[in-house]
Length: 294
Image (cartoon, rainbow, N blue to C red; front, side, top):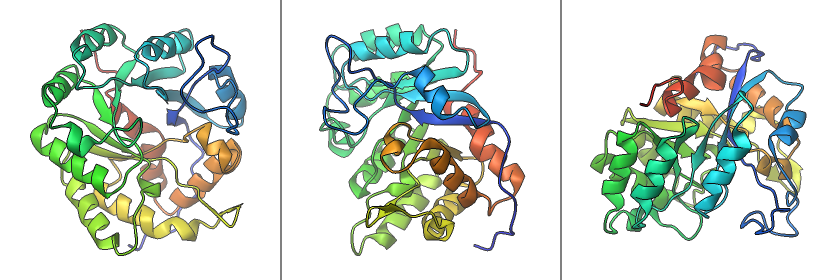
């Protein structure tokens, strides 16, 4: 893909992927675990300190816990800060209590969707065969909320394809696609899966987890990331790709300034108007921001 040289975007940004947690809680937290470099309180004021030098106007938090009660904790943690635009929660669509919990969450405008994928010993390809799973996600779609995935590999993408076939009305957001795990000899199959998912207009690509390390050092050359990013951009287009920092998990690779700076330099290949969609405008379409849910 030949993209004319552009300039680095310096406009407003919506960060669509951060995690919040507090290990000081009496009940603790399931992730991260003691000994991890990010095992410490990470709350809204910590994020704003890290992001203070940038034009972040809004943030979406993604639940980092499988505990149902933590949806309530995250909701209360976001309340009171208008820059916190909402959160992606965590429920098991095969649970008998799914509808009860979903109905409770639906009352909160800050609730934007649920996450399901390669975490907490889940398997989307297999799990969607469990009783009630599809009907419960149909209810999620009916509420106007979306489904985020997690930690993509070939099996997860296959599960997303099958889920989208069964529920074409469900908005699906594929998290962390730039860092998808593609094994030796799987590149062509991965490209086919990406192209197939991109043919479904309700599927979006959240381009979080772009930075990578090699031999213990951050790879800061945008050219290293070009092939994977161009594949995703060409497939999903400038209207269905958008930004997430993955803070504070990203801090294990680089600080916030370095992470965002690298992403901006990677995206500077595209016209500024396209970058504005990526960093700001596409979040509204993906998560239904500003949509009345009565």
